[in-house]
Length: 323
Image (cartoon, rainbow, N blue to C red; front, side, top):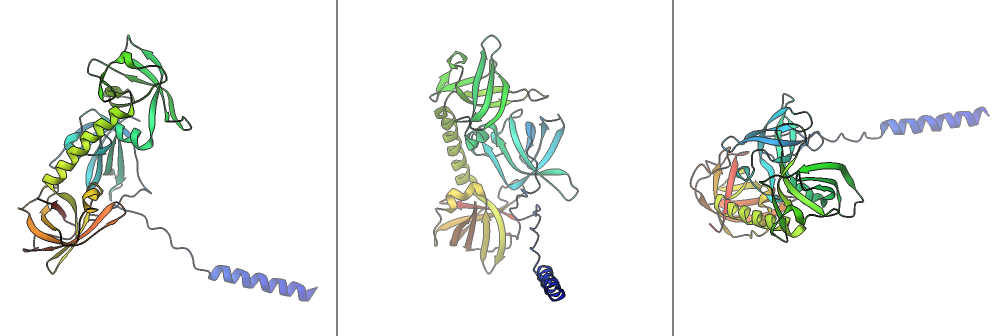
């Protein structure tokens, strides 16, 4: 018995030693906003619904009223932030004061929730999540629509008994053409673009879409706006390195469509940019030596014909394709 007890104790001790000697899994690094890098700290973020109060294109800053508690929150837009407008990519000038959106925020070194990595408008949220406002009640006299927000087959219900108001400025759309309040029926799946009223969660519609075709028409128009902007203003990104006449670049998510089409040997133009993402000098000629996608980001290397002294690592850049 003593022998068996000793063997058991020995096995237990060896097992405990083996466990203690096993390597400890490395802790997942905590993501942090870092100048010159595209980092979205999804492990530490807030995404409140809010009513847009202000946007300043020169400084890329703004503010919104948090619908949850009516506090005014100020933010600084990261250069790579996704400004999602009309269910597509947009920019500051596309947004209207008062509109409701989701604002993704992260903390700075002082613990303040001020770094912004996306503004997602209502249309983008509904389209991306494949959700609708299913009509429960209609009040033609007041222009109110009571609805349940859910996905197409209602297997997921986000909220019920929500009220959306309409007024004389509300536009209604069906099959991509103007419609009216009377065209809405109980049970219809709507989508909308709404604005706040200065307090609480009240929503008033600017646009009400009675079908997918109407929202997609707005989306198609916005895609054309974005494409024109990329052609005229250049693809935005960061300079990763500048050495021996070559620039290594990270181009942002909004430029992905154009990065995918880039070929080795293709002629482009490049220029360093300021905080407002606008070029600070006339663009110079360059040749693509490598172009690939890394997730949603473009990794592009170009050989520059002129000097590269104006391009600083972690600095902003614009790249023109076919300019």
